[in-house]
Every structure is written in structure tokens, then in C-alpha cells.
Image 1 (cartoon, rainbow over the protein chains, first blue to last red):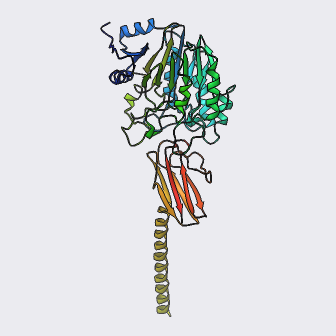
Image 2 (tube, one colour):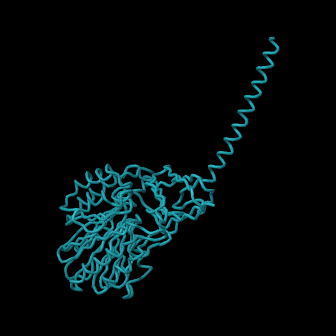
Image 3 (cartoon, chains in turn cyan, blue):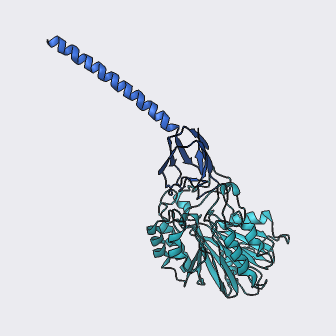
Length: 319
Length: 116
């Protein structure tokens, strides 16, 4: 047990020190576990892996995000290669994931050939299904028509939907369409009404996983890292005992716990972005080539029935 | 006769030099004018944030970021396609007024054109 770094926190689950520690470890491989509102972080050493193994439950899935196929500038001139590395990493997981969630920005410029290339790479995933939500880069010029035809079949509105898997209710939301001047991410009234109805019939003990591109909580509004009506969406989920919100968009891991809700953002598979406020703009972070793959990665999520929370593990493509 | 020809040639040359100088001056003035109707997109912001132009002016936006942006009027009077790095968009303002606009991909980016 001496390999683990464990922080016991107050029951409010909002311990800044522990949160930062967890983030600091995220870049090198960390396991952030929330149990009963208490956030713990474990460094992934040899025994850390063993511990992670023991947490494997009935449902295991992987989140990938922000592949930006078509981007070809510093610090990553080959985003296909890094997406392939992410696929290889997923295929090498000790427990194959049930499915993969892609939380948006599949493409860089919504070009058909970019969507084609993404399709081609993800075909080698050894998993039955990939679920998508669009990022703002996927709905350029055509308000997401092409995205919907290719990746959002059988979804509602601009691409939102829900599904159930092994007792967990998954909700994919779209907060990148019809954005308002001066505003942040936006879900819109129609989607909010649908969400309220969608969860109405569920028991409060049902674990909920919400996934959307832009963070639903205010990570850094100055850079547009938040969703204007995100709080309203979350108000419909207050009665649930376990809510996990998975986002992308900011190309770095971040985690926050508020009551029964765990917010988490995933790394990109294409390029990192600066930490909030540490650069003049949120443009791509230019890092040396040998550092790039330590800042890109995948997120592995495990659910154990009967446990209060889901275990979230961020793994970089390389350490 | 020969002398007259040389004189004529000299006069013509002088005239040519003058025309070239005048053209250069005009070209220079033109360049300055175009700087006054250009908006640069850099570091997720429009510069200048407020640009004042005369009616009939064509304003050109250039994206200098390595991330794509758009130029969209709040009232949807003008709307660019997505602009990748170094791509441009132009719009000619005919009527006086204030035209607020934003980037529909990153809506925190806002600015305006004043036509007067």
C-alpha cells in the first residue's frame, strides 16, 4: 500500500489540494476514485495497476476525445498516428471495454475526408461500438448535417440521445450548436426539455453518465470553457446518487466533485492546450516532440454494481 | 534634328518618371487605406475590436491563428465560412450603423464594425 498516495478529504468532496494532486498525477498515469463523496488518488505503480485491476467491474468503457483529424500544425503534424496509438492502447487494455465514447471534435474542419480518416482508424478498435457527440469542429459550415448523417443516426435534435447499459443510464448531450455571441457552450431549451423527460422515469439509485463536448461546468469562462445552461441540465440530475459528467474540449484532464456529481475532462488524442489562464489564448500548446504523447491519452471508466461511484483512470499515450 | 530627338526623349523619360512616382504614391496611399479596413484574428480575438469605416468600405478579416474561426454578424447580416489559418473573408458595408459580430465557433470572441 505504500505505493499509493491517498488523500482523505472532508465529506463535501471538494478538496483543492487533493484535486490538484490528482491532476498532477494525471499526466503520468493516475487513478482517481470517488467513493461516497471522498476523492482519492493513486499513483499508478506496479501495485497501482494491480489495484486498478481489482476495481474492474461489470461495465468498463473508454472515453477518447478531440482527435482533430485534419490538424497538421505544431505540436502534432500527425494526428492520425496519435489516434492510432490511442486505439492500440485501448486494444491492449487488460479488460476490453464494452464500448468507446468519443466526446467530440472528431475532425478539425468538418471535412468529409477527415471524417473518413477517423472512421478508418476507429475501425481497428476491438470493441462493438463507438458512441459520439459532436464538438464545435464537427458542425462547421453545415450546422452539423454531415455529422448527423455519419455519426448521429437515430439521435434526436442535433445529435443528443440516451441509452442503458448494465444498469447505468448514459446521456449524450450536444452543446456546440447555435452558440450565442459572447456566450459559452449551449444546450438550448428543446434539449433541456428532452433531458428532463428522459430521466423522469428513472430510479434515483440509477447511476448516470452524462457525456458532452464542452465542459458542463464553468472550468474557465474567459476561454469559453463552460456551458451557459449546464447548471439547468444538472438540476434535473440532483436527485440521483451517482452522476458522472465526462467532457472534452479543453485537451487536458481536470476533475471536480460537487455533491454526488463527478466532473471529469479527458485528454485529446491530437494536441494539448494550456492550463486555464496560463497563455494569451487557448490555442494549441506547442511542446517538444518527445513530450507530446505524455500529454495525449485515453480515459478508462469502470463501474462496479453496488458501488457508489465510477472509477476513472486517465492514461497518457506514453510516459 | 538629332538634338531635338534627344530632348524629346529626355522629356518623355521625365514624364515617365513622374507618372511612376505618382503611381507609387497612390499605391502607398492604397496600402494605408487597406490597413484601415482589415481585421486580424489572432490569439482568439479580433483586432481592432472596434473598426470604424466609411459607407462602401470593404472590410477584410484574416485568420492568423492555428485554429479555425468564423466571422458572423449577430443579426446574421454577414456570415463567413469557416476560416482556416491565413484564410480571409470580406464584406462590403453600404449602410451606416453598428454591426456587432462574433466567432460562431468560439462565441466569447466578439467585436464590431461601425459604419459612418
